[in-house]
Amino acid sequence: PRHKEQEMIDTLKLHLQNSNTIRIESSQAEKISVTTKANVGTGEAQLYPLATMSNGKFLDGTKAYLNTDTFQLDLTSRGAFLKFSMPKVYHGGEHNIYPIGKGGASKVFDKVEQSLADNGVDLPYSLNSEHWKVSRADLFNNAITEYPFYAYNAVFSMLQGKRLKGRQYGGTGFLWANKSRQVSAYDKIAEMGEKGGEIPKALEGENVARVELRAMTAQAVRKNLPFANGGEVLSRWGDSRQAYTNKIQDLVFRFDDIQEAIKLVQLEEIEKLKAIKANKRYYLQHYLNMVGVSSMLEMFGGWDGIRTAFMEIEPDPSNRRRKIERLEKAYFEASTLMEGIDPVPVAQLYEELKTKLLSEVA
Image (cartoon, rainbow, N blue to C red):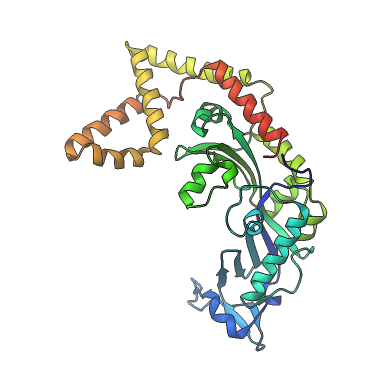
């Protein structure tokens, strides 16, 4: 169980309008990578005063950046952008699994500022101030689920996000997105394994589904979250949980009863079966073929994954090509089909996810 004051902010990206108010220690300037681009029309170098050096000169360039294990700093003509993961900084770079408290968040700001100073970067204002606008924020919650993540694929496949385009990726995650907002659901343990992260002992052997709400622009932050600048991140600490719950429910978990979603999917599948039946005598076999290939696409992470796998399975190029063509034919003979649905377990899985993600903080 988590304390009420613990907040679910992960990635935070802050924007300072004038990057040249940042002071760079001249003796450490070589740590900063500077890129210069030429103007397409005139061929002249596009130089901007990206920061002020301690020797009084400007750090000129089109763009500059400094990336460390703690933060990513970008200096541009549009200002300075500073990005970091609050729980990851708090946990010493080990992981970003658990939410942190207000005291922890204040320590994170101090630690990022100290890390910047250690790298010769002196900020004109504290991160805990109105001068640093929030240009991106990711909120998250974890559900310790009874079953592995893939068992919930049928649920996530049904949950087409409102005003968001959905897609599955790599067999271990789902993303609903537009230009300003994203909702991502993925297997947190699998993700940590891929990145080589150390899984906390308390979660060894557990199934962890993580669902993130990402406000990708400053406008999306203002519209969807209770804070707009670094000062408000701390002063309004604790308010984000309700914003997360409201938005995740509105955008993705918007069915009171999963039977509503199941009915929509069933109607869609009935129409597909009717369409195949009108053109194919053995329509059920065609349907089963396509459902089978759909499942293969999920497991292999798309057509590229299938082609790569068959290079090992079928060393002979002509045999391999015929097998892949057979799969493609089965798949594209009619509309893309979703996996079969068993209403009883899917209803239970939906309720479990909804309850754990919207009512608890794990």
